Image (tube, rainbow, N blue to C red; front, side):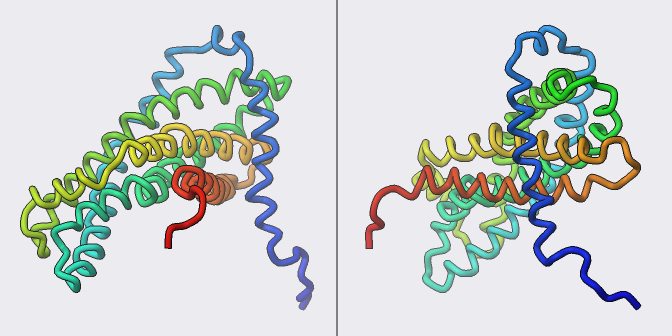
Length: 256
């Protein structure tokens, strides 16, 4: 029996982050008006349909389940301090700043990346250069992903927040009104801005490029690429979401 280790431990990490360099190269290929002029709007409607309309059930169910889980954990802990009526503040901040972007949005982007990886594996050999591939394949899908992420992000936030507000009184919060009032006082413009930067700009871009580059790497060979695309999407989304959080909230010396 051959028990030799053919790959050193941790080698998979390089496979997950390797799409970053290729993505930067492909981004420069998007900097052309020619690609915009050649957009096929009928094709883009198809992309918008599966990215947007066909994802609403996924987003709504995910938002409801995440909101219920977060509400249970928050209310149960705050009840120990007789502070369950301010759970709306903690839940709304959690959903806006981290939970929403790192669960629902990242899950949707992973789904997009997996599908685009399979498409790119098939279509990449048909293009004569990476620049033409960027303009013909990546650009329309990137526009659709960015466009669909805005309504999906708003819908997911509203659905999840209302689910938490309606569920909270069932487990100890005085009323939905108290939940909503504490949330209103806790939410600031920065929280909303951070939420939409992550959901509308960062995560969809990562999903599109991670899926595309993983599909390119297959070069038409019949090998599975969806798993690599999902791993790369989640890892880079986590890293960039952390970067946005640090840039937005970690300022100067901490107040102790």
